[in-house]
Image (cartoon, rainbow, N blue to C red; front, side, top):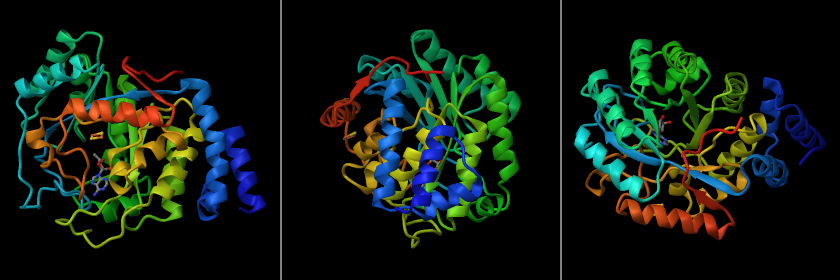
Length: 349
Ligand code: 5AD
Ligand code: FES
C-alpha cells in the first residue's frame, strides 16, 4: 500500500467523503494491505452502531416474469429457457407465515417487473401481511413503477423499497440495459421513493461488464450524496443464457473492499452480505460481514420455485428449506462471532 492510499483511507474514515478522483485512486491502489487497513477502520465503525448484531430479512421471490431485458439478468424477457412462475397472494402470505414462525420480522417481496402485480394486487398483499403481522416491516423490490404507484403501496403499509441503481454512470447504464430502459427513470424512481418516505435501498453489481474504477467511483459518490438507508452490492455472476455469458464475474476481494468503503461513507447504512457473494465463495457471506456488512437475506421462497429465480448461475440455497437457511446463517454468523437478531432491524440514525 502506498502512502497516498493510506492517506485516502484516513481521509475517508474522518470525512466520510472523497472526490471522484480520490475514490478512483483508492480503487486503483487496492492491494491486500489496503484491504486490511480499510477493514480495520470499517469494522469498528459498524461495531459502534450495531455491535455484533446482524440483521436478517426474509426474501420471498414472488415472480420471475419480467418485461425488462437487462443484459446481465437470467430472468430477462428474451431468455426462452427461464421456467416462468408467479406466486399467488395466498402463496406469499403462506411464506410470510412460515417466516414469522422462524423469527423473521422483515419480509422482502422481490420479483421481476410482472404486470400481474398491479397496485391492487400488490397493495392487497402488503395490506394482508401488515394486518396479520403488525410488528413486521414489508420491503418491496419490484422494480420501476410510477410515483403514484409507489405512493399507493406506501399508503397500503409498505415500509421500505429496494431498487439497485445498477450503475451511476449513464453510458455504463446504457451498456447494461436495452435502449428502452432509461437511467433517468431509474434515478427518478429512487428520488420519488425517498420523497414519499420509504426507507430506500440502492446498489450495484461489482465487476459488471464495462465497469471501471471510474464508474465505481461514481457509484460511491452517488451513495455518498443520496445517503440511502441501505446499499446492496454483490459480484456480477454470469448467467449462461444471457449476452454476458462469457464475461468474467466480479471478485470476492473487490466486493469486500467496496463493502468496507461503503461502511465508511455512510456509517449507519444497512449493508447486506449478499447471496451472490456466498455463491462465488463458500465463506463469501462471512467475509462480507467481516468487511463491514451487517445484514443477511436468507431465502423464504417455496423450494418448488427457488431454482427458477435464477438471476445468475450456481445460485446457492435453491434446494434448502427456509428453516435450513435460517439456521445455516445463524451458525455461520456465530462462527465468526456475530449474532443474528430478529427484530425489524431499522436503520439506526
Ligand atoms: N449477477 C449478479 N447480480 C445480478 N443481478 C441481476 N443479474 C445478476 C447477475 N447476473 C442483481 C441486480 C438486481 C438484483 C435483484 O440482482 O443488481 O438489481
Ligand atoms: Fe441457505 Fe446456508 S443460507 S443453506
